Image (cartoon, rainbow over all chains, first blue to last red; front, side, top):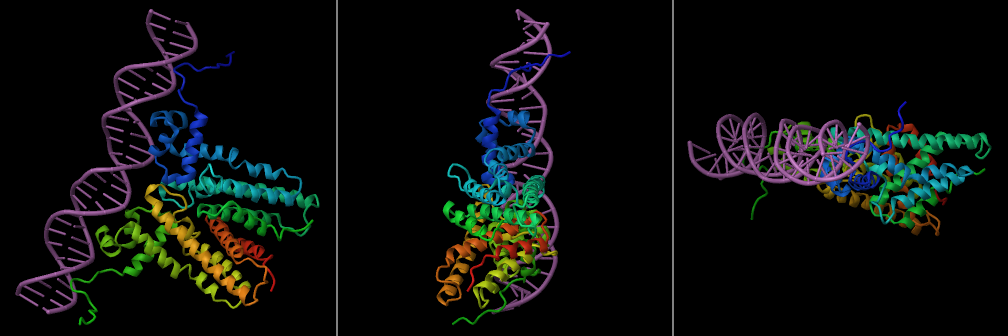
Length: 202
Length: 202
DNA sequence: TCCATTCTGCACCGATCGGTATCTAAGTTT
DNA sequence: AAACTTAGATACCGATCGGTGCAGAATGGA
């Protein structure tokens, strides 16, 4: 029987891996996967290339882990929105979260899940695929939530969960692009309000 | 008085500059500014680096010219939409054109004006700025067109041309992102229809 | 105390980046 | 034919790319 080893032998790492990952996420968010060089990344993380490779594997894995952190951090609004009691509140919270996260003054404008690797050469193809899967996953969760709403008579029987989910995701993605172009929070919230004006009534 | 010289002295270029630019546009469209290397570009254009530099200046200028060609080619739907007789038809044609152009089977998925350089490192910053200006210009044209519609009582007096323009642009940008993720033409047309369901009545 | 292990800092790897120099061949004007 | 300009091919430039090898420092277990 092995007892749980709390501290692995050897010299412990001299940096906070979570904090380093946070900084890497911000660099990817601002510059995209291909636009973020290892020099940019490790510079912001405050560690050397060697330490980065030992802790995170390689650039591609670092990106995946940064995306995970993004999901649980800045993009956590999506998971919170899904827990709202009604479909309308889900949609409203989802777009409101999208607006506020893409226009945070202390973070890069836009959405890592969109601009992290929207178009890419060969070297960024894996990151591109990861983001496509990420957006698909978000859309699937919305679809399931709206299917549940239909089942609960929270949406009219004729409502199409698939379409509603894609519609919301499309608007959110557009908001992210607009944010990169410098659109303000209030401008985008108006757009979100407009997009919800034709939401199916209960 | 100089007479207009039709053919400049020296050996004429041995390739079709328009066709070469078309191929460069397709590469930028698919891989983005930073993701498209000179090797990729000149390979698709069928010319050498030297010829490319002589004909187009450098990579950045090549991108600007490819964007112009994109505007007059695949993205010409936008200019055509602006000439529709009513605001509603403008909006409908704009989104329909956005859907069909981002899902053309013979072209890369998505929109060059969005994915050409959404996020970028230092080297892609100029292309990024060019695309932001490009999208701003499209939005301004929509705004002017809707202001005209308000003046002509083609839109209700309370309609906000600025908001309507940004709303349409946001949906179109979202459609472009969705197209990259593999959304089909009919799926996106449904989204476009949904987005127009709350268009202000005359 | 000594060893094993892992960290850090730095130099370095081959490959590729955008961009050029150099050469010959070719075509058009004067 | 002379003058001029460009095409095409090749080789090259310094810089940067993602990724490593190595030596030394630091820590845990024995």
